[in-house]
Image 1 (cartoon, rainbow, N blue to C red):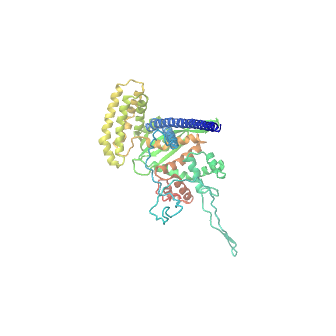
Image 2 (image 1 turned 90 degrees about the vertical axis):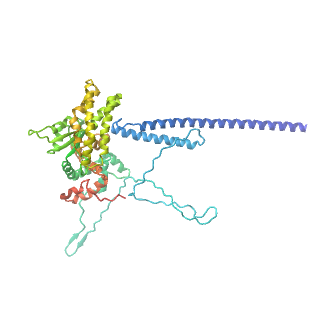
Image 3 (image 1 turned 135 degrees about the vertical axis):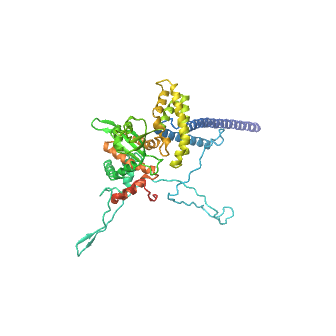
Length: 530
């Protein structure tokens, strides 16, 4: 009886053990299947992200230089770069979470990191080990070297207060009071120091931030700067800087060759409750001539050629322009038969007609034109570092034969092209402007295209997306004046903010006879900001 009970108990125990083993195996199989499913899902996700990364890279690096307008191209390139980094980070995160993945980890291309600027101040952080004793034998460790890494950091704009204390001293015998004089300032009695005025002007005209955004930035540090106060400072600083702008325009008109272009600007029209179209005219010095680079902006209410005539006045020389009709009167001979301005045609504009044609329908004729024009630009690249005489000789030997062959090809091709189409228009543009297009090749100092002034206008086009419209004609003229100074400083390799701050400090007591020393192409000895 007892033996049977023991046998029955052992059988029950074995049955329970077997049941527990089966349940454990089932749980293990379910867990393993879940892990396999999770790995498979991650593998699929990594493959999808890797494919997306490949497409993004192919799209990003196959973009052609003129496939999009300049502002759009910059915007999309930033977005593509952001998307590439985001996808790479997602793939890296998934791979790190799944070390046994079957998907190969993509290799991230890395260029050598550029060294951080030497002029920036260094804040050293020394990281010593917790103990300088050997963890194995207990003896003292000996320093054999250092591992140094650097990270770039930035502090947002810091607001602080200059407190000027002028003790007053009295003479009891004479009953007089003496104190240190108050230094002259751009805005007498104003609360804004030069650094703050520079911050406002750079924010508005260099970074294209409307005043209400600068007001919000200051408010984050509990500094109340009303828009009316900011506007008052901008207006007064603009008036103080106007003599420098006038002097820059004078220097520009001493040059023998200039670039000119214009861009539309919306201006508020309070009487009608909407905006009207004004224009920002740009005049730039020629980089192939000696001397500092100068860009002068001239704000005008319209696009009439009379505005260009008024700005240029009695100036005589070569003027590089596009085919806008407003410039044509500048090149007409006067009553005595003299031609005050000689027209230079922009080869980039002629090329653009063929580029658009080729982009639209892969036109073989347009491709041929692009290849011929490319050879002209290759010659210009070869002569970029030459002096004027050497460049003139190079153009005589190489550019002129290429131009002659191009002209013969244009005439021959046009004779075989039907009227009215895009091909005819592209050919006619180059043929009609041919004398102006080839004029540069007879010299060593004239430019081949108008790209320099178009590049100088580009920041204005970006800024218009922020400030939308000029508030008034006077406001547009003030913006043109400040952009003239900041743009010229940038062209000459100066930091516009440092130049402006230094100039605003000096200007109140600077003699007018030495005003050229303050212009943004003068040699300046400004220490880097700490």
